[in-house]
Image (cartoon, rainbow, N blue to C red):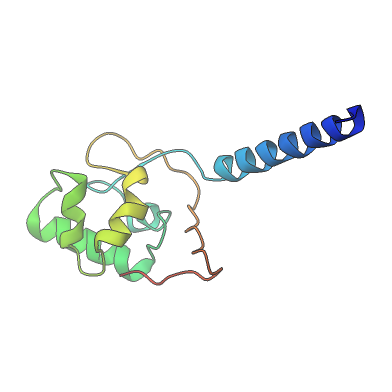
Length: 116
């Protein structure tokens, strides 16, 4: 291999790592406490719109606070697939620290899947 080939390979590898890192960094940091969050705060979560945020609030008002994150699947419109998307961003205690909307990742075919 010549020096030019080696340098080209290094540049391509560095570019790929930079792109991968920026995609990961694009997701906002923070969490939403599902026991205390407002409807607006809940809507920062992936796949949570006004209707689902309302159902989460109605559920916790009718049944008391969520004891674990997994209990959120009892809310109509949240299944196991939705839980997988929500889990990194939800907690049942502490402060809500998520300040910006989390975008749902696209599926491999390029489309967004609807909530289950």
